[in-house]
Length: 336
Image (spheres, one colour):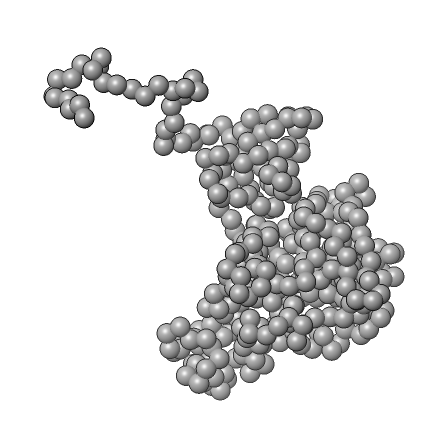
């Protein structure tokens, strides 16, 4: 190997030729100070549809972002052709910090975390009261994911003309979750959309629910006619809905005072990613009582300090029961 002394000449230093003829690679990344902020509306096979001011722009992720993926709801910095004209393509160079994240796994044993929606203010959990039958365990799992990700939950119960809502609402009364009950007739005449809309104005709301519960039908009633999505029906044999929504899509509310994000129907909602210690943050009346808990307390064991906290009258026993039911939902199958 050739060694150089202190007084080497430039001609003595060998440089590797660049066969591609482009600039040599560097670890110094551009700051892209001229980038414009946009919002990701949907993602399809590596192409991201973004809203930049009042224009819809197609973009792709810059290589410098590595494996970090942008998802629906993300605020991103974009450079390149931002005209929104046909066959143009911009480039996402930065993903801004997220205020909330809705995540799920395929099941509780799957370590692969799927990020569904970013920066939503609330999660609307849509459940039919019949056809298909409600699945409280799936609702519980969605609630845990909402609390863990920093979203406020909202219950939307559909098809009240087929079954009453009282029994299901009784399960969640102690959680103080806002709710709206709708019927198929109300969906058709617009009354349901008006009552749901009161809970959505000025917010970004992600909609999640089992296939066939009427989630996309409700979303269609809330957005402009030209933005409506295809809907399906419930299979009379299996009692399951058909997936008509295959990717998450952000849509402006009719009147542009808020956003709804329609997500594909789910048949499972894994919680492998959830740290149980974060769920307690959704129970401000119980959280101070955890100060006396042993380290790594599951809040459902003999030494848990929450039992004494409730016994001393600081919180309603029903609230502790609700917390423990949600924390235990990982141990139960969603169909139980």
